[in-house]
Length: 107
Image (cartoon, rainbow, N blue to C red; front, side):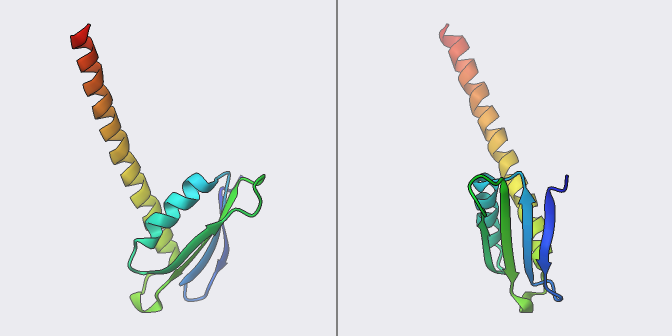
């Protein structure tokens, strides 16, 4: 099954509409936030067509003067979100190891 489908991509690539299957607000909102931090982005929003459907419709519009397409911005947003998630996981594991070592000392 296709997890990502391009619904609309303007000729110049600056307006993009994507459908992400088997996803919800968890990915939609985090990805929207990361993408909006990109200076090339004019607009980024997402919607969930119906609460019982597990799909996210994401729309991205970039500034034409910046020369970056919506698809490039989307891919960069995914990479940035992955990097942030890896940092959070690493810090969590460090804190957990520190806690475990403190508990062993107390016992």
